[in-house]
Length: 452
Image (cartoon, rainbow, N blue to C red; front, side):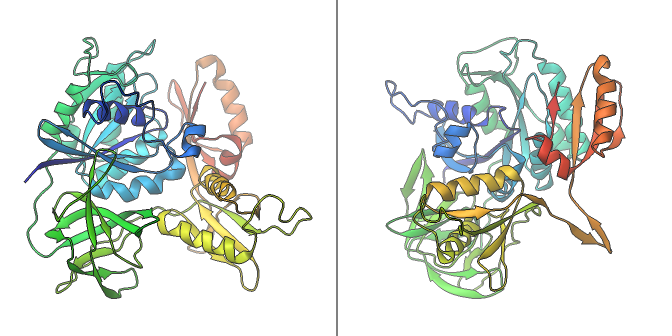
């Protein structure tokens, strides 16, 4: 059986996740020596390239020293946290990337907390040590303090640290001694990330992602939790509502490089794609036909903002798009729910109006822009913060904003923030931290932290 390592790459936005994956793909010799692979190879979506961010998580693999490394690239924005939560179930360890100058940021805490909760073994990669005024040793201590505050286990706190610059193409165990390649990172993955446990018994697989092909339709993607899946095998699909349906696996694929390879069987611990499964959702379980045992479903945090979607009934109706009716818009939103776990959609009675709930303005704006480019024409309302009633009291989401300022600007912060109805949570010597009312924060800032 082939040695396997399953890793997820997690970090705050712009800390270098996709660039690290690019260098790992090059180190895995997926391209010819004279081939120009370009930059941000996995950000192949038009919106991702235009905005310079990762929106969808992606699976690739490389072979290094007779070991198959399955790599899961994840988004960095908090608005796309649902993508991170659903794919972490496929990993046995994670690479936590931290900027050598900025240190741990708000999304660093969010994704690290999710990884620690499910017991992933972290490798800390302090990236961008080529920046002027970087502070790798101090950032390493900050990461340790963050893990300690998140109740990490002793094994997780005993994390290895790799330093380097993904842009320059080198990694090292000592940032003062640069190398000319990233093999120290790959060696650390093989040494410290545990091999997936081989569980014998009836087959089980949790569907954590989906793909689509014009030839074979929807494709279920997940990690085999137990047993072995084989091509042509009859399986039971355990759905959200408790129903179980009999299905058959027509084709079985594993991830190899940037694509997939058709195989006859997949053992526990590997990530695979199933063709021929119908009517599934993300979170459903593929199980043995004679002993269908569903796995726990993926837990996703609740949405925080909502927008109203409706048909275009303005005088300019039909000028920009070709899909303009309520049936078209309704079908498209329903299809989006299949892959976007953090999204919720409700329809008003007897009206061509939908309320779409998401993680934030960026999350919803990406959906709107995607639909517009696909030819849909619609009207949207203003973003609204979701108000929930808890124990008879109305509550709304709050976020923690940390502002790093020098002493001369601290008075400005102390006058401006209370005017926005912010509540102070602490006031250390150098850092001012307060809990913001999310209604103001979303309007004022594009992210939940800023540095002056």
